[in-house]
Amino acid sequence: MKDLEALKKSLPPGIDIRITSKNIVKFRARFRKTGHKEVFKTTSDLKSAKQWLTEQDRNAFLDELHPNIIKNNKKTFSDAIKRYKEEELPKKGADSRNREYHLDWFDGQLGKMKFSSIRSSDIKEALLALEKEKAKEGIKLAPATIVRYLASLSHLFSISWKEWEWISENPVKKISKPSVSNARQRYLSQAELSRLLKETKNSKCPILLTTTVLALSTGMRDGEIMGLKIGDIQRDEQLIILRNSKNGEPRFIPLKGYAYNLIIEHLPKYSDPNALLFPSPDHPQRPYDTRSAWRAALQRAGIKNFRRHDLRHTTASYHRMNGISLHDIGALLGHKDARSTARYAHISTEYKSKMVEKLDQELFGESYEK
Image 1: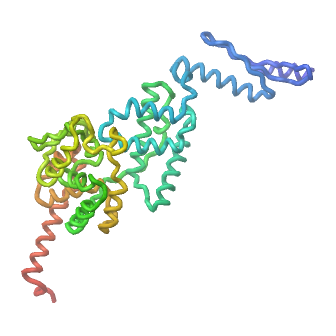
Image 2: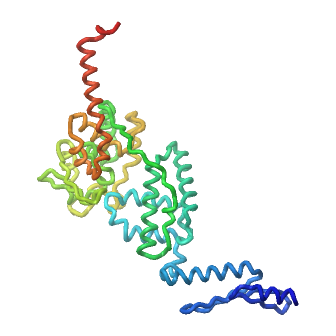
Image 3: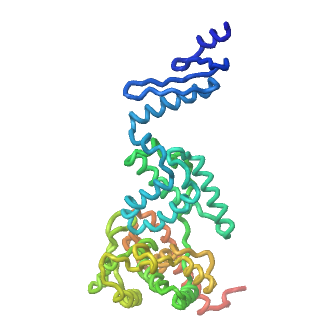
């Protein structure tokens, strides 16, 4: 009895002892707080009772701070994805397809988890799974790709935290992102360009040639091209009005020559100015998925280490070799920061150097060599 009395005196506020009819000691936790319903829980050990009280206190605090967090505590990651697709994704314009692709992948990893219970450690595990999955396909994820996946996920959590009040923080903010180098300057040689155009023309994908030529002619991003609508094509002015660019400002892009002819051939099939220019045949509200056809064309053309985005680098590099200023190249590509265009600064000098060397060989051959 003395031990029992000593135990009672040592109990924290809100917990007392109950003795069952079979003389078994139980701990009853009681949570009382102004403005909240009084609740009880009986457990067989003191530790569980203390944990339960702590959880009730935390929930009450969150309920006062963010009432919706407790109300939506049972929402899953998939529930958040669904709402985000309905409310936020349509606002993302040209970038919506990539964001949807990233979030769908995370949905496969985290979909069944309670949204409020997801921690940064869960996201890190998902990223490791992503790297392993790509490694099996023979692909090593670049730091920039990982950053893009995290950016899509971070926006989902930020909206859920700040606007929906489903959670109390953004766990992605705790993850250290890999450093990204923008030094990549892969572009097509004239021989590669010729082979690629031939294979895109022979592709079974009906829009691969048109979208590839458009990318090379204008320097537009793939997301910008696939997000184009019929009304964005100004036929008489030979212009594309890019209303939803990456930097948030509209761009006016000249549409000339081969690219113009291909687009004009493509336009008569459609009439609604709000319809996508390159819609999926199965889902008209979504852009056509050309990824498989693109990879197959690269393989047939024998082109390695080349991404769709490198078409944009090719456009910029050829403009620079033709003597176009960095300022004008940046304006065409829609660069807000001059540092984004600066990567092409050396190309003109390199190209001129090769021209001089080639002429030197033609004029003098090996006459100067010992």
